[in-house]
Figure (tube, rainbow, N blue to C red):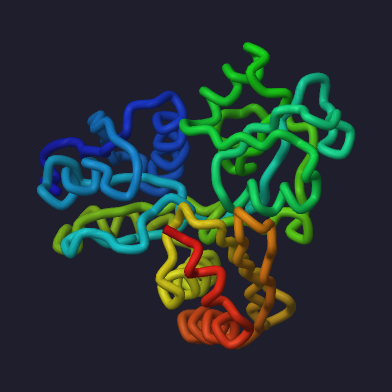
Length: 292
């Protein structure tokens, strides 16, 4: 980062991504009132998003993304400089007239954004027509308004980012819908050699949230799964203990393997690895074999 110019913040260009970026930049400005930012649109989605290449190449200095969408493997010169304090980590239902999931009629079309959601909700309401949709919450709302779906499920953090809390019909507890790794926290990605931007990002780093997210991501890495696989993992604190709960799903059979483990928060990475090994001992390989 050149301190003589505004910090260039890479954004994927959608209304949702702009809102997400703006939310985090406001927090940075509260810590550094004099900081100046320039939004640079770099379209693209997915693990191989051009925005990560742009960050590594120095085209942009900072990128903001929900931690549940941050790839497990980043370019060698890019790192997660900070994790924001985790807000609501759960998933929510948005439906016409505030209808609850259990009240949706049989055969109703329910939009979901991931295999993680479809396999869990499928075990709860198997008579619904569950359809995976691509895009962000603003596009999903268009589908709902156009009558293409009767309802859809998204992460609560997306609703809060857009300021659409009044549209929520239902919040799902983890016993019904376990969140994705990192859900509820924003990641601030910078270049490893950019000490100035990294230092700025760390102004809003939340140590406890970072510990939990590290444990969740360690679980995914140890099992060598992708973010798009039907896998969920969620960490929470009980007193001074970090409790990590996870599940693997099989989209074809609808079967779910679920377990949990607790440990010292200071050994969060090891806790994620130990939980993954527990899953392997319990038969996880049969589930993993069904993933692409």
